[in-house]
Length: 253
Image (cartoon, helix red, strand yellow):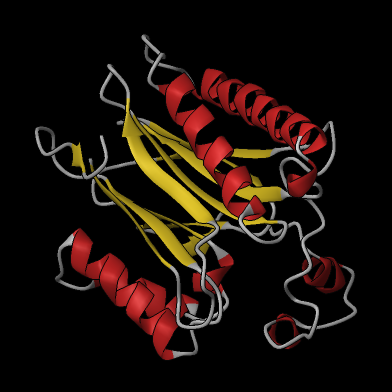
């Protein structure tokens, strides 16, 4: 598998509160993460940093290949543990009060990919069925869409579209969504913060992932588009491409 993580502060904000990475364990299996921190001056950066560092450390201790059920359980347990760690850190450090982070993480193996998410950072998959969003946003606007109060088109321009209903670290216990899909040669997974998904359309994402570019060029192109359309938020993404055996590598392993 080929993988890359990139992040950009954007054109407006002074600090980057996003974090993430693509990490390989001794089995040669990957964990890709994107975390979008929130909570004021540098507190969001603390929350997303705790999330990524904890998940990275725990993933690198995995010594055996996981089944899909075990992968879902691993993500449930470790994202829940991250949630508690951020929550406790905020209680013990007054300047971090109210901080939290979205998390979208994908365990990618030669047989399947298992995705977990909290918040509105997203996972998309491109395979023979096309290009689709795998995760569901935990956001105020998505609830309006689900209940038929506004259309998906209206959601893209809604003034409260950035209100997140769920984030790791904002409460002691949290529900985590997980989903497992078949992951085969030629398939691609994109994880991203809303700094990308709010600005770049699904069609543009799909066209970029299909383009005859290196993974670095694809990542750069997506960030360039988000900045071209305003770049008001931090922009982070991870791309995992299922390549032929023997090509497995990532830029942060």
